[in-house]
Structure formats: structure tokens, C-alpha cells
Length: 435
Ligand code: PMP
Image (cartoon, rainbow, N blue to C red; front, side, top):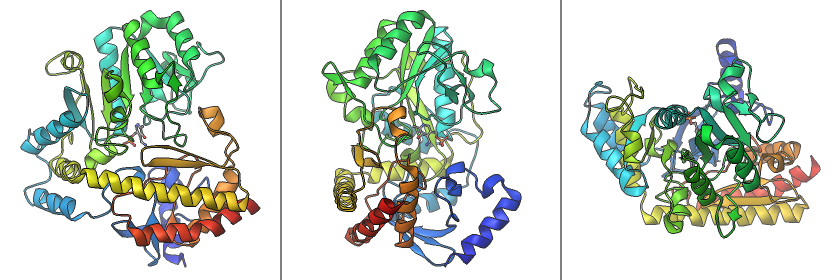
């Protein structure tokens, strides 16, 4: 029964475009009524009609420990009781930044309130530092709704881009180059033609916003290593967007799985999601000599009323502190079980599928071939995914309502939650086969 969600959705649509405050939540890609969630605990969501679901969205990444984790709740309660925002520096901000610096290759960090702000600010800083204007990004990588990054590829590989949405002027994307992901030749060609104008290249550390597309190997090292080298050779900055992967795919993010042992470091990194513990907190940081260009130390302006908010930093710090080796080990166990169960169910139902991962972050493409880039991701069978999604939802499993999103697990996904997903998969895979 979804009468409560139906009624709320009708009310919401009267006063909010599409009835939601972020588009994917509206179920546009899969149809039906989004479930209005009333509460969440560990791996479970409870909607306003009292239905419960195993949560495989996890707030699109932040809920690494599961919902209402006791240590996070306690830290938040303690912080709230001391006031919710001062507009002055606080000790928790310093502690959170130190915790991030200790886990990642960044030397200095600035806190902001969303991933969008982090990437927007990193790009401004890269342009201010290099005195150059051109930004390179990859098709299918999402970096938030920054005007210059809402760009779609132009007609040729090294031609500048077109706005990806109405409302973005051509002048905002005409300095953005959009290239195919995992394509070193396209990167070489772009840098050969425009290298001395490129301020930075920004990439998801491992793309998760077209489904999970791991960085390929290029001549024995990761695509990220190749990008870092190419940027350096041309005096451009390499910006690694770890908003989704940071503190999730390992304690030190995607960099912990390739950069740390390959010996390269990004010039700038963006973070969000997990580091806010479910509150609006994000960050950008990197080389100290680059960060020194930020106001008030340097000339590049950037600011925020709620940046480093004391409640958000308390939640983030509690989350990072609780993210022990055991937590990452549990994420891997849960992800392995779900991947194996999904593969078995789709195989039994005769549904072509490819499961791709980085760490415990994974996605299921309903397609024949491995996916290396956005063009490949778009071959996924979205109608079959819609049928699969609804069959899972009816069986009490809340997947991302889009075929192009990663499935997120938490360390609170216990055996009962995992069993509920595994039990639901065979019939849902058969529903996909019929779609
Ligand atoms: N970068 C990446 C890689 C993301 O996945 C997202 C959000 N999904 C963002 C940036 C934007 O973050 P936010 O939604 O907090 O603005």
C-alpha cells in the first residue's frame, strides 16, 4: 500500500517542480510513485505507509555506516545542544580537516556545503592559479550542477562544448572540452591542440554517475595516472573528484586503490557525501601552493555562510572516526554477496548483464558488453531495469530509481538485510527478462 506516499507526492507536485528537490528522486526513469521515507535505521528505510525496504541508495553515498548510527547521532546531538551555526571558526572544523588530510593526498582543505560547490570552487581555483581558462571533462562524469560542467560534447573530439541544459549560456561551456572516458588518444589529442590553454582536467576518480565505470589500464598504469602525467606535462592541474568515491571505496578513496601505490598525487581533490555523515558538508583541497591562492591568503575568492557548519562537521568527524578497517571489510562482504546474487539471478533468467565495481561501489548494466564509457553505458536496457526495480521494490528492496546509478551498501547491512535482497533477486530478474 502506498496511499500515504501517493498523497504526499500529489501535495509535493503542487508546490515543487516534479514533487522533488533533486530530479532522480521523482522515479521519472522507472515510473510510479516515489516512496516518502519517514525514518531509517541501519540498512532499513520505513516509508510513511509503514513499508520497510533494504536501502541500496544510502542517500546516494553518504550513509557508509548505515542510518542513525549511534556514534553519529550522539555527536550530532551533542553539537546541536551547543548551537547550530556561529559563523566563526570552530575546533571541529580543524579536526575534520585534519582527519581528511591524514587519509588522503591533500595538504590543505577548504570546507563547503555541497559537492557542486566543491567542484565549482576547485575549477575557479585551478583557473586562478594557472591563469588559463579551458577545463577538460569526460562525458558521463557528473560533478554537480556547475554551469560550465553541464556541458555535452561538441561535434569533434577537440571542439568546445554545448550547454547540457537550457539555462546554461553557450559562453559558460565554450571553454569546456568534453572527451570520452577511458580514451587516452582523445586526451592526447585535446592536450596537443589546446594544452597551453588548459587550466585543469577534472574527472570522477572512478565514474559512478553513468553507473560504475572503473578507470582502465593505460600502458601498465591506471587511466588516472596517465591523466595526472598528461596534466603535469602541460602545466595543467589534475582535479580528482572523489565526492562519491572518497572514504567509500577505501579509507583514502579511489586514490587509495590506484594513486597511493602508483606514486602519483592529484593537484586538487573534491570530497562530499561520506565526509558529511549525512549532513551538507563537502570540501576541496590539494597542493598547499595551489590552495595558498584562495582568499583570504590569496586572490581567488570563495566563501560560505554555512561552510564548516558545527553540526555537519560533528557528523562527518564521527563518521570518519567510526569508519574502521572492519567497516570497509563488511562493505566488501556485503557487496560481494549482492554482486554474486545478482549475477546468478540474471544468468538464470537469461538477462544479459555486466556488473562493474570499484571497491564496494558497483552497478549492474543490463547490456552484453563491458562498459568503458558513456556511449557504452547508454546501451543498458532501461525498460528491463524499470521492471527489475519495481519487482525489487515490491519485495522490500529500494534500489536507485535509475539504471545509471551505483548501488550503495553500508556496514550496517547485516545478514538479514542481505538475505532479503538475495531472496528478491530471482523473481525480479525474471521480471526484467519479460520487459
Ligand atoms: N561530484 C560527484 C562525483 C558526484 O557524484 C556528485 C553528486 N552525486 C557531485 C559532485 C555533486 O555533489 P552535490 O550533489 O553534493 O552537489
